[in-house]
Structure formats: structure tokens, C-alpha cells
View 1 (cartoon, rainbow, N blue to C red):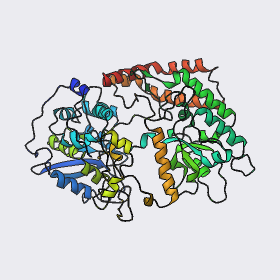
View 2 (spheres, helix red, strand yellow; view 1 turned 180 degrees about the vertical axis):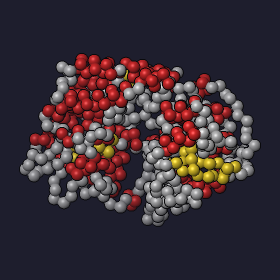
View 3 (cartoon, rainbow, N blue to C red; view 1 turned 90 degrees about the vertical axis):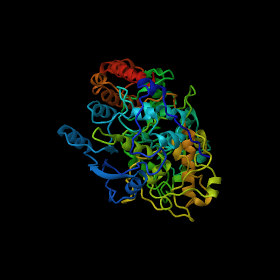
View 4 (cartoon, rainbow, N blue to C red; view 1 turned 60 degrees about the vertical axis):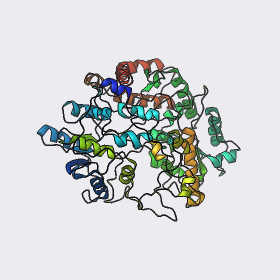
Length: 574
């Protein structure tokens, strides 16, 4: 059943920042919930980045759908997909008129605030406070959010001056934050008469056995116990294994800000548990249990090692990866069934986190100060948070690109039933893939004039993406495809929620803080990545060189980074 909540996003922090400004109802809008949104024709120019796969924006089903449902004459202004920031800067500096509203313009927090303070962007916070034009946002859209997501939908996008210059949209699947981790070669486990490891100690024993006991049975010492890939948190052996000792967020060379349960900012590489984790990983490397290629190759190098066919033996005992990176076609790869996705390994002190990140809305849709009808522009964005608009924008028209589930499909429940139940849903809401009885077209990623091929104008929090029907055995094209899905889902469930209470996401820094920070975070992140690798490979020793490591961090400005982050965190959470 569907649970509709009203006015759930009236946040205490938001109210304290800007107390209840009432907005006069626009005489050009119908009553909330009435279609079309506008009672009389209104012209809006919508600026968006030109996506190469969209063949026509004007004669486009999504464009025409929005025109029909909102009653707004939408004119599309196309920014260059790569140079849009430069284009926007030139428009503002030359005094050229901006589009009334801009969608998919990926400004970061600093850029948003800069344009907002200069008067180019409208502060949308009063609209959300007034609740007069947030019919869908407060209703259908809110029903797909957890309490935690409701609390941060607006606050995570606030600038340091308390303004909200972008309309928030969610676009994240259930799996996204939990998709990276270890995959274990189950045929090796069987040959070695070992269970799939669940603790870091069991995993160490497995790595040693892979190296020393010839589990592929070819008489050669060609097995690689553990391999990943470089320059991506997806394949990062170091940070992923560290999460059996302390939390380390998903980043390759970022500064890795963390917050404890009380909201105190800290850095993992200043903690004693970090030393314990590095010692373990360095020990594995010294014993030949970790491949050198993990620190140099890309994902395709890993794929060449795991996506083997025919008589070629498996050589990889375990891989740190997103499962799709290991195979060119993970739903049909011959060796896909040889690998089992596992959850985080339990460390010696009981720690078993996933290297993940703070899931946040996107804040890349704006109303500009040149818009003469900002109420109408806001009401259009509000409508786009509705379920129907989201499915139309993401997939295409109903009945051809997506459909409502049948009674039989509803009876099977949701694909992620526990996630759906957490927000009060027990039945699936939509289905997009083809079945033997109901073939569906695909617009996403294709050359098309059906949709705009962007997700930032859809409302897809994790709860929404959970509302597809659970698969039936006959829906799989092969046993490999079935295994691929079931193993993937099992890995996600084993990792889901294994993170600290507080995750540090985007922080809104003041102009003074930005000036103080400069490139400190980048410099520190680069130095930490280089040093972690040297600790693991034996070029440095975590104990003998610990003090010099900490001294260098201070010289690079780590205290300034922590202080600025703490101030920004406190502003957002006070």
C-alpha cells in the first residue's frame, strides 16, 4: 500500500534559519494537484545541457508531456554538455538574459552560492517553508523517503548563508552505496574445503591457502589470492580492507572526512585503528597475497584476469570490485557463477563497515532571477517530483517503456521488500524490464526523442527504486543470469546499512573558509593515498614512520581542514 505524508519536510533547522515567509498564491496556477498546473498559458525557457543521445528536444515525448501536464509552453535552450559552466559564466558577465529555469547544470556548492549571492539564482527555501506550491514534494515524493532522508533533503543543499538555490531531486538506487566489496572464488573454497570467509582472520587463512595449495588444480603456482584495481574506490584494496578495523569512506585520493556519533569531525588516518589495519594489509602484501597490479591496473586489467573462458583456469581467488567490472557481460559470463559477493569482513574488534559515502539529493536544477514567473517555474519542478512524471522522465511513456505490475507481480512483493517496508510499502509500484508476456521498449541511453536521458529531473530515492516486483524463476534468460541477480542482491543485502551513524557529505563553506582551505584537501588526499600505498608495499613502516606521517599532515594543513569542516557541519546540524 502507498503511504502519503503531508508536509513532512518542514524541517526544524530550515524553520530556524528563515522563519515562515508566506508566499502569495499565483493567479496563474490552478489549485494544488489540479492538472494542468497552470490555469493559463505561461512561457518558460528551460536551459539544459545537450545530451548527444537526445535526437530532438522540442519534438520530444518528455517535453510534450510536461507541456501537457503543466500547461506551460516550454522552450528548450541548450547549453554545451562540456562547456556549460564557461557558457553560463560568459552569459552572466556579459549581462545576457539567462533561461527562466536551468536543469542539469552541475554547479557545486561553492558555485551555487556564488551565483546566488550575486543575484543570478532565486532562493527557493521560502517556497518549501510556505508549503503552498509543494503539493507533490510534500505528498508522493516524501512518501518514498526515510526519516533521515527527509531531514536532509533540504539541509544538505543549504549554502553557508542559509539559502537554498537549487530544487533538490533524488536519483540513487538501493544498491548504489553498497555495490563495492569483495567477491570470493567459490570454486576455490570448494577445492580447499573451506567456507566462504566472514571474518578478516578467516579471509587471511583463505588467501594463504589460495597461494599455497593450488586450488585451480593445474599444478602451477599461478593463483592470485587478492587483486583489485587503481584510481577508483571500487577496486581499492586498502580502503576497503581498512573497514574491518575502522570506517574509511569511499574515496581514492580524497581527504576522507568522517564524523563520530556526536558529530565530531575526524580523519581515519590519524586513528590508532588505522595503524592496525595497515599492518594487516602490509603483512598480506609482504607474503605475496596481494597482487602488485592492484596499485596500477584499471578495471579492464582486472576483467582480463577474471573473465576467462574455455579451458583457461581461474587464477583469481578474490577480487575487490563492483561485480559488473569483472565481466564484459556479467549476466552471461561463463565464470560469473564462480564468484560470490560477500559482506564486509568482521575485524578483530568486531568492526565490519562498508566503504561507502553519504547519499544525498542532487542540487543542479535552478530558477534564475530573470524568470518573470518563478511561482510557475517552481510548480513545474514540484510536479516533476510526482511518480508519474518521474517514470515518464526516466523511462518514457506508460505501456511502452514502463507499466504497472500485474496482480501476480504485485503478489510477489517488492524486489527490495525490506527497504520498501521501511517506508511503508508492501507492493511493487512499477516494472520496466521486458517479460515474455509484456515486452518493453528501452529509451534510456539510446538515441531517442522519448526522454532527455538525465536522472536529475526524476525523484528516485532508494525507497522508490525498491518498488519493482521481485523476480520470478521464469523471468531469467539463463541459470547464469539468475545467479548473477541473486548473488548481486545477496551481496547488497550483506552490505546494506553497514556504515556509521553519521556520514560526511557535501559541506557548505563560507567564503572565508574557502579561502583558508584553498587546495589543502586535495593536497592532503594525494599525500595520504601515496603514503598508504608506501606503507602497504613496505617502502615505509607504519610504526617507524607514523610520527613523521602525522607531522607532515599538520604541515599540509590538516587542522585547518578539520576546523573548517567542523564549522560547516555544525552550521548544518545545529
